[in-house]
Image (cartoon, rainbow, N blue to C red):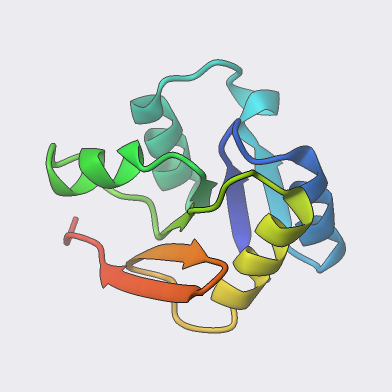
Amino acid sequence: MAALLLDENVPRSAGRVLAQAGHDVVHIADTAPAADDRRVLAQARDSGRLLVTFDADFGDLVYQHGELPPPAILYLRMHPIDGAIAAALVLQALTGPVTGHFVVCTRDGLRRRPLPAA
């Protein structure tokens, strides 16, 4: 079971599927509505949750601006956004190593890049 923090752009339907699969799911809209990206990163990091997002800016914050990362970032890259497919991509990513990685999840597969050391 993974502890996940879903960004506001992740459909609640995806969160329900992930919770039904046994994961501990928190949606940022429930704990810090309209939080900026740095606050979302901090909440994921401080709570030890993997961040799930459709927002590529988190990669910039971690790799370019030196923000401390959470245990992992799962970046879902797809358009249009579909909750069922998003949940399936996260579940697929969680079958492999994610901790310490920025994982790009697309319909065509996964790419893992190590996160900078804290």
